[in-house]
Length: 290
Image 1: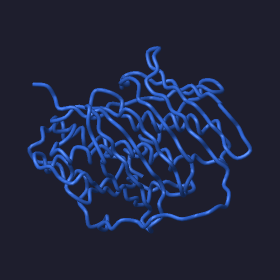
Image 2: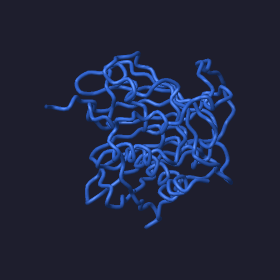
Image 3: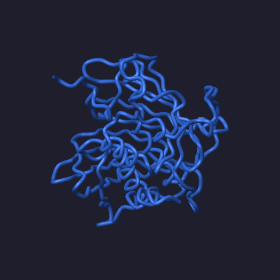
Image 4: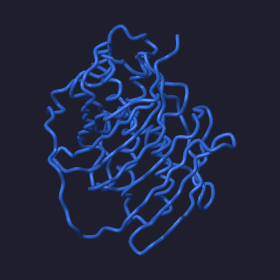
């Protein structure tokens, strides 16, 4: 296991302050605020730690309310909304400096047999044939920006099937992107579909989903600085068990943007073709003012 992955696991290992109150550390991201995927993953950890282990998460719905301060801890308060025979519902509020910065509702379900179907997995190149994210960085990026971009994703092996937004800035493309990802090391002891794997996928899901919005307008993205933005809301549905330390295909597209906002929708597939997760996110996407 890489040091960066261990650091991420430590970040997700929240301190229990009271029965329904948890505290998490934070760290810097590409922009001077807490990475949204970190807050979402930590909030899901907090919710999951109040739920029996035999009830895996099946969905989450979240709103990003304020920018998080990477220099301060985050307190997560869990509200035990409902404990039913099959479903459990939790609400989590993340607080910094006395103000809520994030709100999440999550639902968990006991396993049961039922009708089962899925659409076909899209074609994608083999992940081992693709360059790593670090290898796709443009050579003219400022050294500090390149370093922060690599460090922010060091815990994850992230590979673009096509050129990332920063590599084709100035040339609008189809608003569709594919990324293979897995953790940078194996996760021993955690079963497929367990809270750890679900939370790690939640963490990664916020990294590239709005890329497809950028592609439609030929924008290079946050690292290049030709757009400014932030996540507004985030929703995920977990359909089938998966492992975050095995290759997962993140197939993403943007159906629309407007009003200073862009919508991204995506599906996460296991390498053997099982539909594991559906993701939808809207974010602020603005052209910087002169």
